[in-house]
View 1 (cartoon, rainbow, N blue to C red):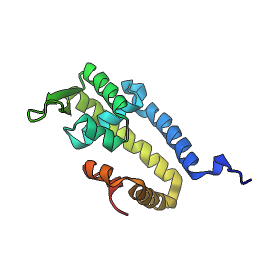
View 2 (cartoon, rainbow, N blue to C red):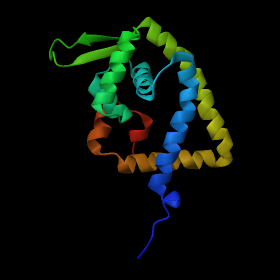
View 3 (tube, rainbow, N blue to C red):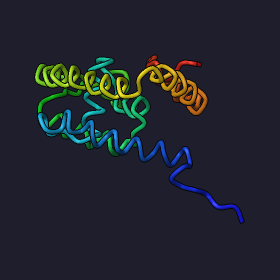
View 4 (tube, rainbow, N blue to C red):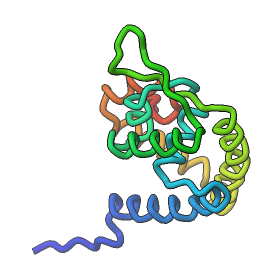
Length: 159
């Protein structure tokens, strides 16, 4: 029988790396703003694109609608985002950052970019190859439906 060395299995390694990066990155935004990972992802997505629906945020950030809903509620309670009902479809709401939410986003972004730069620096000249490989994998593995819903983020583009 063939065995699998789980610690060398690429999907498992990506999963572990993703978890490690998320936890390490949480120290960048969590200690100053006391945000959960889903709350950060919602804040960052709205900060990047402006007004969005919860469904679009879920598609962009690959989060389940329940996590998005809880994060939206928490950010709304902090008065970091507001909801505006869609007149054409009352089931849909447009979410936007408030001034306080925009300020928090503006404080976190430079730290996030510095965190990313630190990782890329650690990779050295291989960083560009890694980014190209990630672009290709994401393009290949992303269902076309998600690609259409995504409002143009770089990782849905064809490699």
